[in-house]
Image 1 (spheres, rainbow, N blue to C red):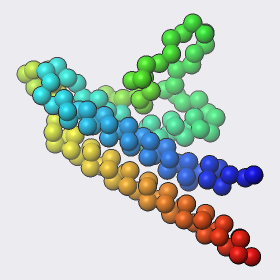
Image 2: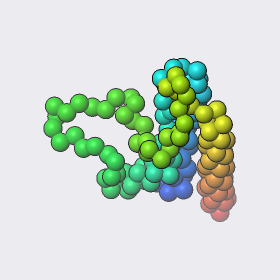
Image 3: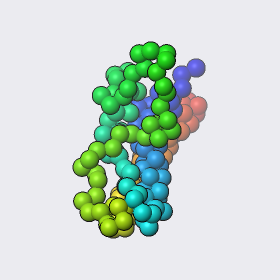
Image 4: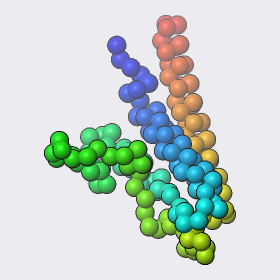
Length: 142
């Protein structure tokens, strides 16, 4: 039987967007939780680059940032290695005397942007699922 949901490219794109937005929200929350931890450095990733890499991987192309295990003796990635790669451009410019570079304003701004991205992806997925539902309903009626 043909699976309309998993074969729909819009739903796949929105699913990947929701997953990445959720991962980014977790990182931002971790940054905010460690705002007073001496020596803590901000962790983040580029949502756009991660989404492009995820889509390339889904289409069968190898991501330019993916590591290939060419030997069975190679170590598998750690859970932190499952996160998309970070870029230096995302690093905060200032660091406090205690070595912590978390900026409350920056993290709040990133959290708001990520929430908007998540909400938009959720709305688009709902619209696409509703469209599929109406197609199925109309096909059953005829």
